[in-house]
Image 1 (cartoon, rainbow, N blue to C red):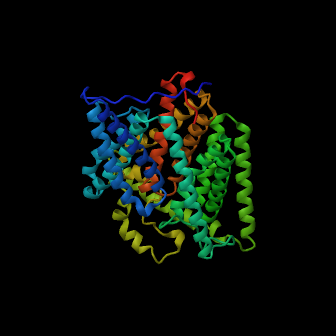
Image 2: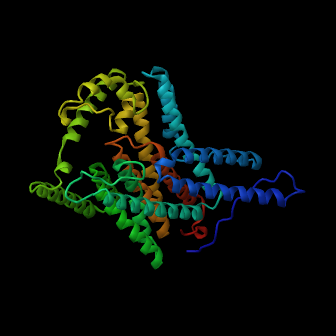
Image 3: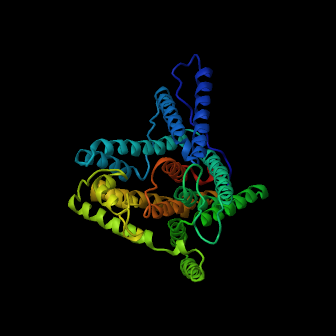
Length: 432
């Protein structure tokens, strides 16, 4: 297949006399946007730097909008998830006046808008720059960020006395905890696998294998069952996308064997805390309260935001502090989907689920249509990432901060490549 490069869009030049100056300035600013996107992707692996990352993003967004105005181009890039995504944002805003704490819910809505802006800004930058080449560079940023993240997590785990005997000490992300680390790995391990499978250069594949091994060890050292459940869903999801029923059967068999092995070693005193089901019991009790509240206001909910549950049930949470852990009411729902349902009602939950389904469906369809191995690898990797991220959010509220930012950037990469496949003739496509 030909490797003919895609012509970079020619910026609008308002003054024909000074043709070279605005053209060079425009190219420089778009290069800055591309580097900014790479920098924000890398910074997403460090939650402590989220505010710096956020300020940098808004500055880059302002510059991008100014460039769009000067060049007279539309900064909004249409995507297959526009309807559910923008519908979800709009519906949440409509429910704010009915919230238990409208000021808090409006503040959380603004955070949601910021995440959505990251997605559309990334789509715009990928569109104006060379989407395939920039996608490749973003994957590089993800690999390098994963390498630093996992290296730090494992060293910190060892220095704090972590062991394979139990999960008293658990590996965590820099200046964060094991939940964040586990979710990062759910987001990046499919990308790393795709990197190893599709790259042919020895040094690139070696880097990918090293990072993948460190990521696997970090996931084990985090001792987070929700992360393992997300990887299980990713493996099953890939088997269904690829139409490989035998793979799905092997995944189920492997999961049963792993759970059986874990239960067996717990009988001789290892990983007792890992097999303890108190967190599941506490979650079920908490989810039941959230569902009861949702049934009382199924249309508009009681207030968008993770802290809404605690604001309503603070008395119950405080009263249960001295009880057995399995009988406590947790201070949060620990489920993003339940949080959306209780906070903004059934319409918000439907739109939220629809958004994930559209992402996976679009990427899977374009994966089957693509004939370039490296493009296929990235498309299916982002689809698998989406399945895992949705599963991980069934057990904790992880759709926030730098995690949400990284997810939306990877989604923009996948949908941008899907749009590229649709618009560019097969003979002119560029491999990753």
